[in-house]
Length: 383
Image 1 (cartoon, rainbow, N blue to C red):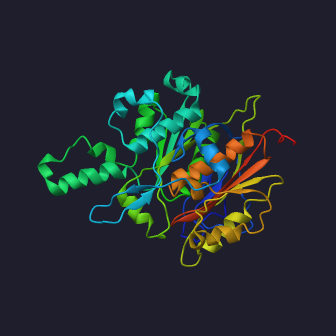
Image 2 (cartoon, rainbow, N blue to C red; image 1 turned 90 degrees about the vertical axis):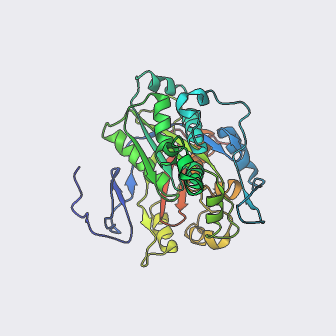
Image 3 (cartoon, helix red, strand yellow; image 1 turned 120 degrees about the horizontal axis):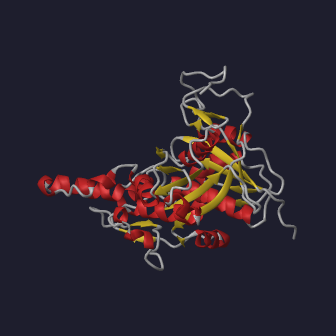
């Protein structure tokens, strides 16, 4: 693929750059280069599994209340003190997809990925299964399928000869994406992106690139994280008040727009890395500069209601005049799942006719600041 003349192959402060949805890793960003404008990519569906419940309606209801969900205790081996987390509640009825041979022993992350993706795909899931639609699959994750990984290595350390080889396939990062493709009978392009919260928006950019290049007819981008005491303990190193959560969120993208209202993915900003020369505050400011304010728009933040962790993002958006929503403050810290919930909530708000546009701001846990903007394809309803 052609590289713009000003692109460089050496290291840089800003991180990756998307130009017409061609992501060029480790290139320098010049201040005069415009933000990345997406070419006619539309959201055809969203899905969610979260501590609020299974499905987008449960997520919507929790965010409308804007109150932190209750936590539940989780034991950590070797500690008398419990860790408090926000887990995904059991579904009201066992999902039919769990009867699939590939999903009977699948990890919680894989189950959540499939559930969110199927909700987003809606009736198009059947078209994919029949081979009528080439689907690209992108799953974005940070900790991975940590429960089975911990269990496998526990068995190896305790008694290597008896460690179950059946568990091992579930320990790899791309297991959820593989299970989803198997369930959908999809042999199309399939990626797993590993990174902090910002990886999810990188996934949206990658999906738009696939669509632009004709590598897929449609793409589903899923962000997921799994709950385990190892991760719940680890996130407390960011801040003791951090509450770990689990779940998944999915956005279904296509180039076509039907007569109904499909939000358009208008912009994904550059990815601004956290480096010695560019701290979180500077990265957040640069991301903010590429998301122009939208009249009547909404803002969906990655803030966790922890002042020290949120300071960079809050400062970057101090001049924002419109409404703000922070899903992680309600649902908990779930890295890529949290970023996916932001995008799901943004699109859901546009579908409701409340806003003309919605900005998504992600200042990740330890890697990058990146943003996106979704735009309604019909004017918002007037009250």
